[in-house]
Length: 608
Ligand code: NDP
Image (cartoon, rainbow, N blue to C red):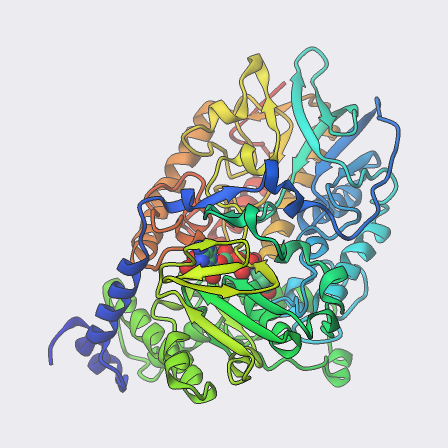
């Protein structure tokens, strides 16, 4: 008994109730089963004959005349990123702001994702931004989609962002006019507007995708993607009550975070439900609760920022901080510091810390697997629902009804053993030579990740000297701090690109919004026409991102494939989800931005 695991377990006094080497072997085996040559190419873009999958089912189309005007700032995207940018710019005194949004209202991901059971996995007290500014406390610990969407609309009203908004409008192009130092933005409504600055918050998961399997177009029943839920067919609302399904045989393909939330409702209402699983999600307890009035009364000014930062510190591996949220996201980090603090004199090398982290991860996932075995009565089904990978290899999920749903007699798990569904026929879904006849197929197959930025945003950008963003970023994004790219002045990228990523996405967007507001304000006050990353600053940041991402790449290389690790190809850092971010973590990244602003010199930017 002297391998690396037992040595660290003995040193830290950790009582191992599992065999780490056997688990590691199992993890590798499960990953190898799923690695596929085609990687991201296993999916197809929703276009052409599949375009109806992304029609907006939530609003009546509007008509309006094209705009040929000018605003100071255009914000592309009306989700939390765009709203936060708008709010922080308003606070900085910017009056002329126009949000352009594809959907029929604000909300972004919460506008589109209205499937039954849609809920935020991150505590609402930290996920919902601008709570103190709006004097609002969420009604429950983990908010459901309608409350979150209502909050996005409240932000829109509070900061007058409805004033000049263009809903149901898609940007089709952006071109820099060097003479005027302005952007010209064109849209699918014939608009031709000018703006001095453009902030882009198109969203990292804005474009639904379908598997590139044969036969989808031949299916004669009903079909839709979870991000365009068809309540006209299923009946009910986001809260359930899917009465249209009581006489329907339904298939759902995919078991990611979305499917985990809607499957309990489908199981409750469908005559028969077939769940086609490729990789099981890890599903831990949710323990949602209404907000306690007593807790709410005790909140002191500044509580929101403090709680948001505390969570961020914890998930960045902060260690011994008092864990305010104290939920499934911070569990591993809490357990890590608890183990270390058992012996205050303990000194661990970096390598030993990494091994301890792995052991705590094994223990956490053993708990999750035991939970499946305890709840699900049929043990073959329970076994198929056990995730064999590290907790953050895939988006962890938390749900109190999901696993119980498999005890219903009308719910059938079709475990495809890592292979996925073979094809679709006129009548249903085929796996392993068996055709499952159904009336409806629901695709819970996620969103485009890993394709070129301009493919996901839907438009190209023409910068100085006619250079296009698609050409410049052909081998992956090139930015300074994730915001600025040389050749594209006064243009700010928000979201996941080369940034400090945190599990609480809105926190990251808020830090980015503050930064953009600072730069715009600085430019306005100093009579600066255009700011743009210098080539040198951009090169330095790209190098830093690639260097710092290497540690994460090793972690993600060991993971079962998914969009987190670029479908098993994490070494291609360019457009990956987590693998394309700054590896130094969010705490360090936000400090870099803060120091940069405090320095006040716009270091790394060329000014004209
Ligand atoms: P995901 O990409 O996470 O899941 C797609 C699912 O489809 C996976 O289970 C995948 O399997 C499966 N799949 C793909 N192709 C096939 C196939 N050919 N046969 C069978 N199964 C297939 O998308 P989701 O919509 O579930 O989630 C996307 C993201 O949205 C989440 O990760 C999260 O970031 C966000 N989200 C956030 C929530 C929140 O609380 N804030 C709630 C819900 C979603 P495999 O795993 O093997 O690839």
